[in-house]
Amino acid sequence: MSEFNLTRHFLIAMPALQEGVFAGTLTYICEHNENGALGIVVNRPIDLKLADMFAQINIPLHEPELQSQPVHFGGPVQTERGFVLHDTPGSWQSSLRISDTLELTTSKDILEAVAEGKGPRHMIITLGYAGWDQGQLEHEMSENAWLTLPASEHILFDLPPEARLPAAMRQLGVDYASLSEEVGHA
Image 1 (cartoon, rainbow, N blue to C red):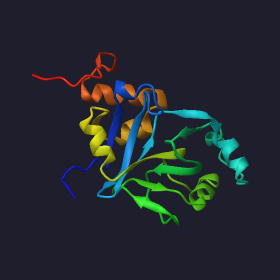
Image 2 (cartoon, rainbow, N blue to C red):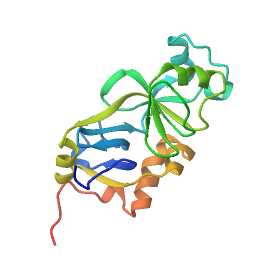
Image 3 (spheres, helix red, strand yellow):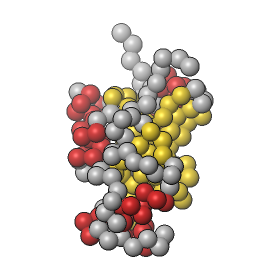
């Protein structure tokens, strides 16, 4: 595999993607290797609250402060499946360890722990994920489809969804309105 690895980075959709599913998104890359990439869109809540989602999967949610927390659109792949991007790694049945402090978990046991107040401190729950086949993300990067920057857990967990993309743009020192679809040349 090449040295190009975007694991633990944010992707910011460039204007070329503004007509598609990734328009205005901030995506966190959970895994990037020779087989492709997997990420979670972290700034697009959907019209579904945790209380409703937990009711649909028959898990009583005993944590009142979580009931109104939004579920997010995580990406266009497997939109019927739940993904939990979280800190406080644990011994969940199906987790991808991203770093010493972050995991992506897809098993029901983490939701049961959340419902009982025994889950992670910080989390983003999504339906679906963003996926790229081998070489696809690299190609999109060469086509100027994304800006990228190292991810920040502060942006992920301390800011509301609508503030995450602007915060990432400020970290880059770029004004989103000034972005162009054209690749510049000196």
